[in-house]
Amino acid sequence: MALSRKLVQQRSSVFGSRSMSWWRSVEPAPKDPILGVTEAFLADPSPDKVNVGVGAYRDDNGKPVVLECVREAERRIAGNLNMEYLPMGGSVKKVEETLKLAYGENSEHIKDKRIAAVQALSGTGACRLFADFQKRFRPESQIYIPVPTWANHHNIWRDAHVPQKTFHYYHPETKGLDFAGLVDDIKNAPNGSFFLLHACAHNPTGVDPSEEQWKEISKLIKEKGHFPFFDMAYQGFASGDPERDAKAIRIFLEDGHLIGIAQSYAKNMGLYGQRVGCLSMLCEDEKQAVAVKSQLQMLARPMYSNPPVHGALIVSTILGDQELKTLWLKEVKGMADRIIGMRTALRENLEKLGSPLSWEHITNQIGMFCYSGMTPEQVDRLTNEFHIYMTRNGRISMAGVTTGNVGYLANAIHEVTKST
Image (cartoon, rainbow, N blue to C red; front, side, top):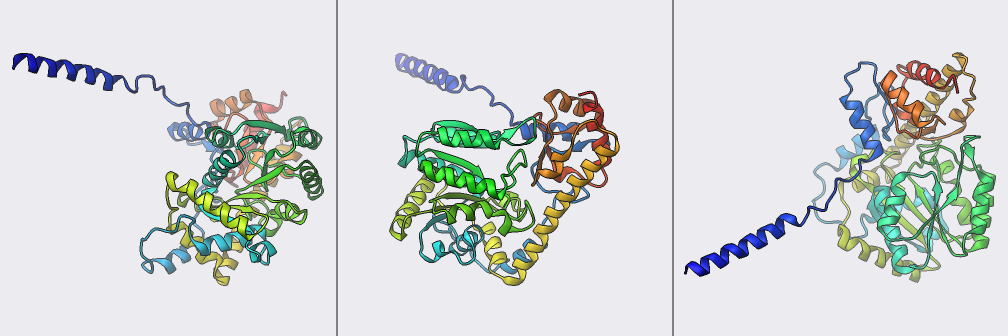
């Protein structure tokens, strides 16, 4: 009996030590650079502090905004529906309305049922679904990602085990598009490569190709047999006009490309926490679209099974009602106009201070972010001396700029850049 008890104790000791060692090799993950900026901002007791790092819209008082069309949609759907699962592909109505935004209200591709589309967990989830689809069905292909890009793009395709290459996009000296480098990289990429493109309001630079440049990019990608995948997180939010912001998509469609699109309602409807997005892929015919959609749903099944319902109901209610859609178009234009106005104000304040530098790029760029051209050391000075918080690559979130702080921000930028 004593021997038996001793064996049990020994076994318990072995198993206990083994379980204690299971996670000893796990190191803390590096902090997200953007979330780290917000943490530092919140910990700063200074009354003068300014946060221009966060990638979410704020009003002119620096407060989060819930659109009136969203509030009204919530009032209409409250208590009217049950909490049952959506299909794996999501809300049919929400997906239909989302495709109209991207492909056009009267798109022949929608009528011909050539688009495979599923509701996704915002733009991030749409990109991840596509990355996994690419890995499963085109494992030999690599994805070309612009330099720079939204940092999470690299994480998404890396974790899907898709080989990555980069292509030139931003020109540091001109603070504009490196069109020559971009064209060369498209030409030199192996035929049949995948290219990740920002449809509008490029993150983080705010630099978009012109319409003529998009036409040339489309032509070259078609000649090389590349597959264009668009991340469109800012439709409507960039210029205030969803049709204008979808121009790149429409150019590629007119040129006969098969394309993929990740869409999100985080920015243009302020539905950040609802995680409402869509992944769509234009296929050769209806039969192919049915097959592709079935495979996208099977990829989603072990990830999260079904997308959430509430945000999808908000979107479908707004876009499916002409009165609410008109209100949304008015409100999204108001957000875009405020951002554009803050760009003008920041540039004018810097020029009035007698800055020796050119700040034309502030108003030439578009969307939520301004790629200022400031160095990491200059950004550190902004934080340490003026309590202004942004990512160290010099990216300014224009949503954090207000009539109340634009003068202070301009003065601080002038102080750290005037000796450049």
